Image (cartoon, rainbow, N blue to C red; front, side, top):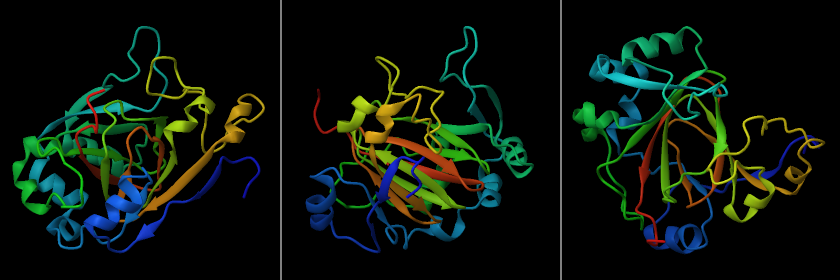
Length: 246
């Protein structure tokens, strides 16, 4: 282990898993897991490429978000631009890695894509109306954050490899997060942290997952995650209702 890196261990990987086993070993104890073959019967596993998505939804206007710090009165989580999906794909193919597609319900705009996947019966009450897509180019990074709705998430991945650093919510006190926010400080590079400036990061014990095409990552509620794209890829998030109203 590199002494300048966050302490981490691999997230467990399974090829298949049944409902009862998933609930007992991962949902109830809130432990991440990568399920390699959950999508094996989905048409999306064979069909979902940039070219295919573009052929279906190339004219759809999408918001894209910058990976850079917000300036002046700009909101950190405001869209940087809107453009047709095919134009965004062209930018990615040309090497763009600052602009990312974030939490976009493309399937609402292109409902034919719903025929390409199923909601798995794995012990999560999945919200059927909000399968959302995330996309980035080679070298893109997503700021460390947790999902404010505290949902159980199945992150279904397509395309090139994507790497995810996962930190459990009980370690939030070490995170240097923005007060009353769901993001860590923008200045922290979690792939190469400055332990001198942020010494509490040495106390973090993270999970680490590499997602290949077709893999599904289970992210329990409240887990912090930091994402790095090895190349152009996208993921669909299937989300469950929060476990408690509070």
